[in-house]
Image 1 (tube, rainbow, N blue to C red):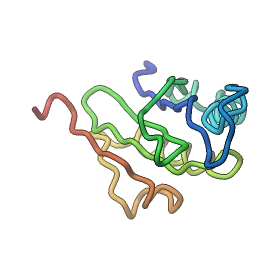
Image 2: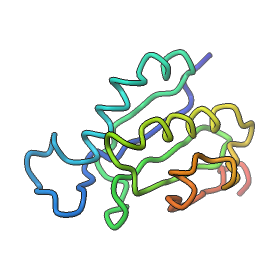
Image 3: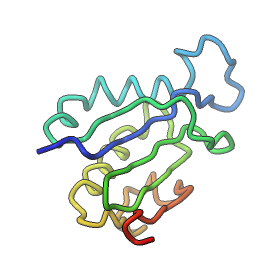
Image 4: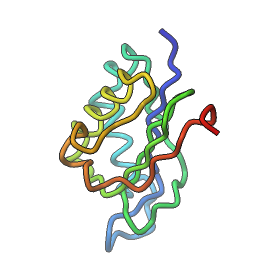
Length: 127
């Protein structure tokens, strides 16, 4: 199984009131670290890469993640909370992995991500 699925985590996201430095303690960096530490082996087995990304430009709704794979819709979510939403993110990534076109209806997504959607971008193949 190839690792064509990506879970991007915005590492520059800062939670409300959070200082700019140290960068490694920003909410997004902590979220990425938590996901890799807690779910890295699972992601490897499932062919999903948990990848840090410097900025997803979702500053008004930190912490942001994106799910992406060839031929599938791309999803961008905000409002993740380090230490609280990692399991919902992984559940959603697993669902995304299983869907042929990557379409994630709202009522099938984990509750923590149902209202957190920022964008659903069609696959290039539909354009």
